[in-house]
Image (cartoon, rainbow, N blue to C red):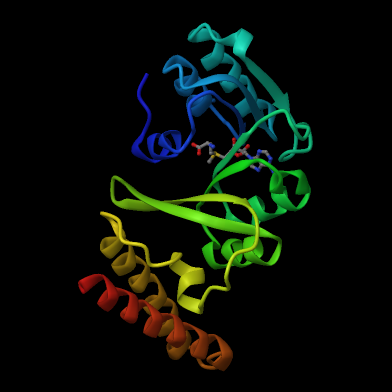
Length: 226
Ligand SMILES: C[S@@+](CC[C@H](N)C(=O)[O-])C[C@H]1O[C@@H](n2cnc3c(N)ncnc32)[C@H](O)[C@@H]1O
């Protein structure tokens, strides 16, 4: 069984011997791969919908790990109790959905490693985490085909405030794909800014915000050149 680069990057962040809860598991590829590798001892694989959960059941049975995976049909972490897992992965969902899931499970601030891989709303998710007593310990960028993803390693705890640019792209810690990631995100912000400027009634606070983000991204690129 092979994982895609995105799921493999998440898997690499899971410490040996953990109990993993994979929220929004779909095919349960992440927990099953970790079990087959002997990296984790048990897993909870949950999903909001019956279709994905039945796909998860198929994968689990096909690979003979049914006795190590608890399958749960539930919204977010509502069917998972504090203390049942020490690592929680929430991947492949919008940042706002991830925040909404964590909002309902404040126990994740205690002794829980969170691996979050948002597809959208990155600034909103980072801001929500900082405002709600979480700290972003690390971000790991990966590439899959033409797309790039960032995986946030998060725990409960106070974090320093982030600038507007940091909310968009995370703190500027050097790593192999960082420059490429900054360039890709800069393109996104520029397109948003051009869209605003081209509109009949540009929203001035949004324009000012996007300009601030672009300036911050420029500084980050320079920092990495040193
Ligand atoms: C795009 S798939 C991602 C699957 C896998 N986590 C991955 O990263 O490859 C998103 C999955 O999240 C599930 N999902 C969406 N909202 C959810 C929620 N509030 N609680 C649990 N699962 C949810 C969907 O049903 C779907 O199976």
